[in-house]
Image 1 (cartoon, rainbow, N blue to C red):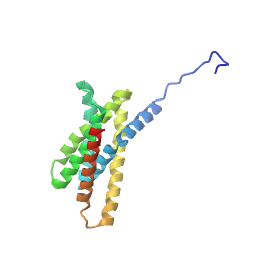
Image 2: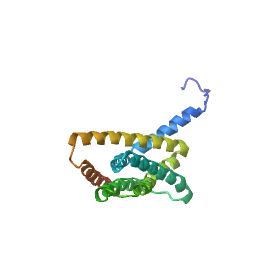
Image 3: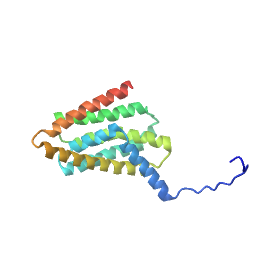
Image 4: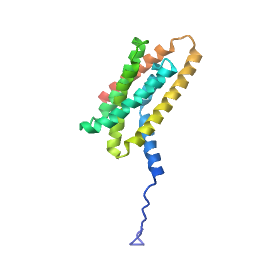
Length: 190
């Protein structure tokens, strides 16, 4: 205000609750904010043949994210955001190929853990740019991952009920493969 040449501003630092909710919410938004991430969560829900396997896959995915966020700052490597997004899109295509070509494959949990590393790079870039606490952001990302997988499972069960005997896993995996490769191609060109 030009009428008052001096003003007094009081700064109140954020409370712990405000910090936790802001940073956890940012982690949730970052984990569920990209098309590639959401498609991967759908592919992950499709890859889990039983509830126990799905929980194992989800746990390994989050473990991969945690490892990437922990290790990347120690390496000094700063991947380009376009590379990270393209790699995340490619993880969806890779998991779809595994669902199609190796429907009874063992050790899928290990593959999903490695694929989680690429999604963790996305979170690591975010943490590097914001200075947020890795723990709070990873907590938010894990909550968003669990919610995305749960929603995908509900949608998939509804699709299976509607289409019955049609091999929905193969059809949906094929669609995810095409979309994942298309998204990867767009990120490479774009």
